[in-house]
Every structure is written in C-alpha cells, then in structure tokens.
Image 1 (cartoon, rainbow, N blue to C red):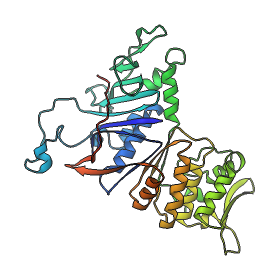
Image 2 (cartoon, rainbow, N blue to C red):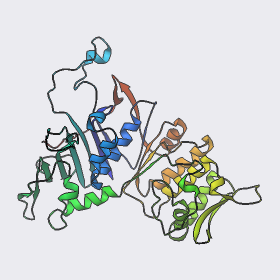
Image 3 (spheres, helix red, strand yellow):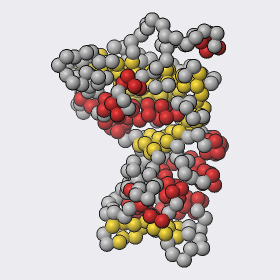
Image 4 (cartoon, rainbow, N blue to C red):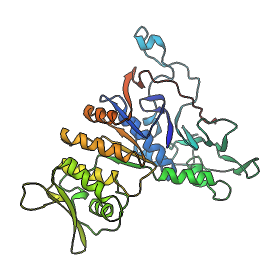
Length: 384
C-alpha cells in the first residue's frame, strides 16, 4: 500500500506531499487541481511502462505541464499586498513525482533537455535523477538504487555501492532498463507492482461505446480501460470470482434486476432483466448511467485485485440514487486493494467518508493547488 504520495512542479501543483490510506478521496471545486492530481498519479505509473516521456509529449511536452507560477510565493503575495511576480530562480526547473509504500519508495526528477543540434527530439524532457529506497523517506542509508544523469549505482549482495550502468540515455528510466532479477530484484518487484496499478477514467457510454458491442470473450479477470470486455469481465466474476457479491451489488443499485451473459454465435452479450419489463435489455439499450454502473461494478469486483486502483469522477452520468450503492461498492473493494477516488460529487464524498475514507479537499491559492491544514509530511527528493 502507498503511504505517501509526492508531486512537485506539475501543472497547478507546486509542492504537494500527502499521506494515503486504503481508501482516499480527492475532492474540490472545478479548477482546483483534481485533474492535475489524477494525471500526476497516472504519469507516475507510466514510468514503469517506459512511457513517461511520450505521455508528457501527449500533454503538450514538459514546458506545458510545468508549474507556471513563481518559484516561491510570499506571504504578501498570498494576502494580496504584493503583486504576484517571478524572482531569480534558486533551484533547477523540474517536475518530480514519487511515492513511498510499506516496503519500497520511488521518485523521479524530470528536467529540461540539454539542447542538442543533432536531434529532432531536443524538446523531449530528460530524466535527471531517480531513486529506489527501503522505508518511508529517502536517505543515504536506505537507498539501494540511484540514478544521477546517465549513471546508475546500486548496492551489491555484500552491501557495497557499485556502478551498474554508465550510459543510460536521458529518455530511459532505470525502472525499465536497469532492473535485474539477480542484482536488482527489488527494482524489478517495484516495477511490476507499478505496472499493475489500474486507472479508470470516464468510460464511454455513447451509442458506439465498446461496452455496448457483443464480441468474442475470453476469461477476463481485469476489465480493460475502455470497458470493451465488459461481458467477459462479468462472466469471469460469475465463474471464478464472487458471484454472490455481484448479485448483491446489482440488486443494491437496481432492485429486483438481474444481469446475465449469453453466447450468441461465439460472441458474449450482456442482458439485463428489470422488474416490470417483459423482455431483457441488451447492452446497446441500457441507459448511460446503468451501463457506466455495470462497468464500475466489473472493475471493482475484479477477481484479481491490483495494488492500487484509481477512479476519476466515477459519478459521471449516474443518478444521485446510485451514489450510495457505488460508495458501498467502493468501500467493500478497498478491503482487497488500495483505492483513490477523484470526485466532485458531494454526496459520494459524504458516503465514502461515512465508510471511513480519508478525504482531502483541494483549493486554489494564488493559482496553486493546496490542501488546508495539511500537516507537513517527511519527504526527500533524489539529488541530481
């Protein structure tokens, strides 16, 4: 489980380090930085996939994602007695992301590239530093793998620090190019753990949504990000997961309704029977809210829970009456995996708080995303 998440220099987040629990809710008004928080967490996961540079490019490049305000915000700027303006920089421009779990921690520092006349990719950000450590806070005593520039050093079996890579390109992470099952097994374990994180963000429910189409199905313990394999995922829960929990969750949201999966010429199709109707409804006929709830159901009742699941605005297109069942579904799922919910639905927040969720409400101060009364958390970034 992730105990601490740290973000620095990303969009509206100048510096933010906060503890997480088994179930954590991030809320706030529009424009306070909820999307920035979600994207930063997803960007951190992209490191383990080797896609952090391309993901930043998709957002407009590093320059478009960096904190755009002044390096330091004085008390006078905050109370309005002095105009907000930049000053001479003391630190390097960087985007930093990191987390600490119950056993390992990881952090990455991305910076501006050194201008190269021989490449057409001179706008790509560079990975300046990385570190993997044991424990909650990075220190010289507990770091067992560290990258500074092109060099990666690590502790050998005798506890001596050795250089294991000397020419790692600035666009490659040590998470994907220095993990060795013999010498850096911890790095490999952490990488695979991060690769298992799941993100669900605004399932499509339009007429041509993938979840509305019947298709050939295979055992699907993990619902895809686009929900195309919804029928297969639900049938997998029936066969190797918790069928009773699935039935209870459907009845909780849609009293006296049932869902079944049928084989139509080699393709799986979802059918839903509702009280008072004389025939079952196909997935193509379901309302947007009903389909979205079934997608969330398949994601949260997965027979193969991840280490971390992140839901971004799961309340979208749901009727208020479904927020209670959704909150109960999320709370029950958090017993098997860590869940972070990003939402602006006050009713959902209140239901999750009643279930014991740790809640943070984001606010804006001088353009900076902040959390009121957040207690300082010990954290250290790797040095370049």
